[in-house]
Amino acid sequence: MQKITLNLDILYSILKIVGIEHKECMKLKDVYINQKLLENRNKIAHGNKIDSFSDDFNIKIEDAIEIRDIVFKIMTSIKEDLIYHAENELYLFRNKTSCDTYNKKSNIILRKGIIYIMLYKGLSNETFIQYKYFL
Image (cartoon, rainbow, N blue to C red; front, side, top):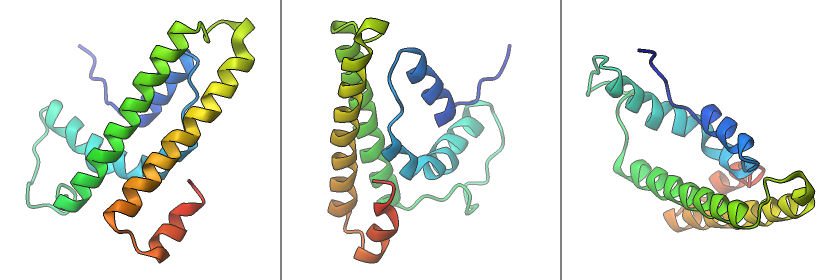
């Protein structure tokens, strides 16, 4: 049996197949999600030994809450996109313009949701300015 390692590139490939653009604002957390969340998940799922006291496996509760909120926001956005694309047949080439318009609106909504999560968490202005480019 082949081991499949989950990461965001796989998600982006799946989204592209069904006609949903990956959202640029998701890039903000790519590295963090891949390293902290998925890498640890993959180690556990594939039976690798993990040192629970290692800094690589250590996630602060505040970071876990933030990543949970952002992942749920992204998952909700993707669910809504899939439903809208299916109901409105945006996967058809003749609906490309409508698909592009919807994807732009959806990206803006997700970006605002991520900004809200980051501000609600209490990011300092300095840290927020560093992330602002991606949002």
